[in-house]
Image (cartoon, rainbow, N blue to C red):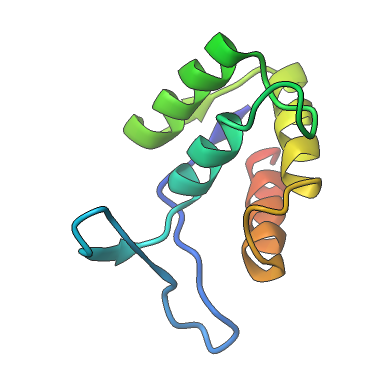
Length: 104
């Protein structure tokens, strides 16, 4: 399955949701940013990936324009998103919608 990590999140008004980097510079929050953080969730918490696998996926989501993942990794990622408390509902819901779109 191919996932586009460059998809951007919007609020209920349709305005872009921004993220700030360590220097306080704003940029649009992307699917890749969110999935990178979620992939790095510790394995023992919330069905996270094993450390090396999570790190490899996080790098791909952060650096690549399109990420190809296996159906098994997709299912684990989706479960991780559904059980996450790292982001609020508007982000989690959009992640799930974007992941479903990637299955088409």
